[in-house]
Picture 1 (cartoon, rainbow, N blue to C red):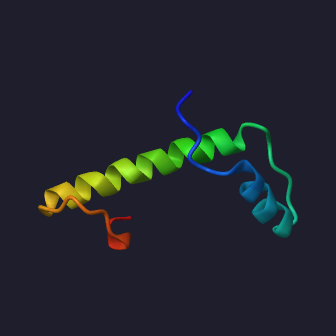
Picture 2: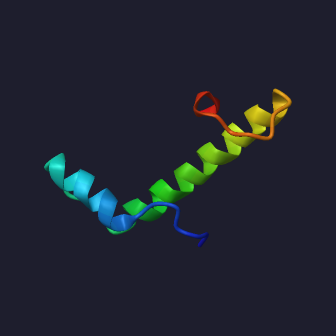
Length: 58
């Protein structure tokens, strides 16, 4: 398992507001997805000659 990139308590708050339940493995899967998004954004920035990630890299 990689380092957790999301705050589980905050995820649960959003889920509660949406009036749904959340499985125990959801936060891990979300963290993995976030890591992938960061990697893709980094690749885009590098392809554009930048070392700084910007919101539009997402």
